[in-house]
Image (cartoon, rainbow, N blue to C red; front, top):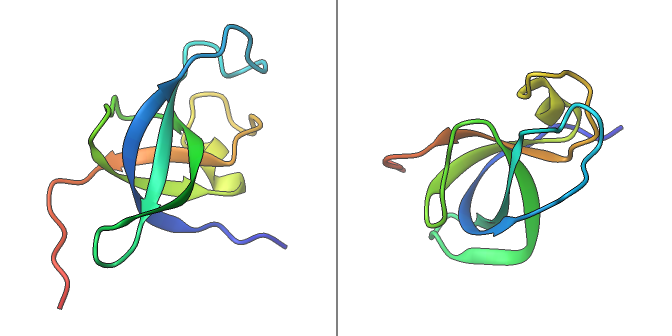
Length: 93
């Protein structure tokens, strides 16, 4: 069983798809790389559905696995990651 993860990432690009699965029409796709605790970009990059109008360079909060589809208007679409927040600041102890 795959567990959903919530993690931070940095938007590094855009992805254009002229054809998408049903339910993904009109959803913006962005290329995101996870970041580690020090803020360094990690490999590999992934494509995520944008639900919050993020842009290149934004620090974002993502959710993965089945829960990613719940962030979209049409539930249960075939996605692995969704951007659910734009992060302004991160404070760690």
